[in-house]
Image (cartoon, rainbow, N blue to C red; front, side):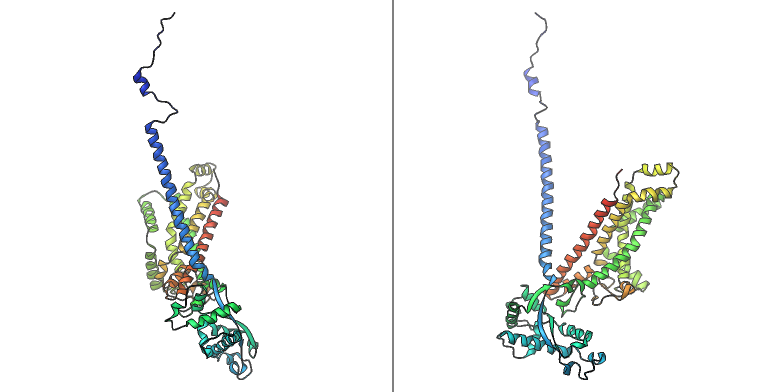
Length: 453
């Protein structure tokens, strides 16, 4: 027998008791909010990925046709009586025969091919075949003969570049109905195209000239290429890299490691941040005023474009470099100073190598941003210039008028012929490949040089 009293829980106490294994209403509400937030994040990422896939699909679908071109293979007779009347194979005499003398030879070759295939056509004169070939075909044949005068007097197999209408018909861009009012070609020409395509003398092949060639005039869209503007972008990037990297890194090191903290440095830091947000076309106006109107540098030159893009890229490189320097723990600096290293030794021997991955990444991202800029180049004339010739040497690469890839794409998108619109999409693919390569290099460099502490 004991005096201990067993206390039974009261009804009110059991009502307010909670188990650690059972979630109360407040916890359930919080968990539901977390699930909703997670769903919002997944939905946002999904929407972004969907739009990215649509964008890439559109670019690839519209741009891939630019990498193929229609060619017509014919047997062209090169009569000596017309191309070399004196028979001495003198280059000076051969050059007197203009493209007007070579165009009928191509017309006759296609007309003969049509007759051999037995194609019924209302065209009775060889000159009517000229609508099937590019306006540059005669110049290409003339150049081939001048390069090898021994071809005169023989019959050669020549791949003639098809006209933009024929190429568009082969790609489904041009139809018989769409050329009803076209003065350049008739629907009957497409009967010849179909027969020659079935015979194999007309076919679409990979268009290396689009990657390696130069821009062309409005009347020759089938000959236009992005190769020369790629060279212009390359020389501009050399200027940007050679100026922005040393200047940006030097300015960042001084501001982060050596500059005193006062109102002047605060003002400089604020202005650097503001410059990173300035519209790029403002830098184009500055480049026009300073480099062209005041310093009288050549207009449309990659050197001027590189200087303008350097001004635009410097704030980005300075900000990313300072962030990389700040990420290095202060203990690294203190340890170097503690064993007798000077301030400069601690920065250049210890801090800078550890910050190198971030510096390189920021530099490449800045270069990629500069590579895709068009607005600053509008003001210095690199958009209106037709890049038709490869620069002559390194000095010419910097000083001769040229264009850039984004400026070339912008110029093509303005032209009326649909073939140029197709080439604009193809140029976007080339530009994206360059940007992807630069970003991949940035990732590889970061992982290669990254050190953990």
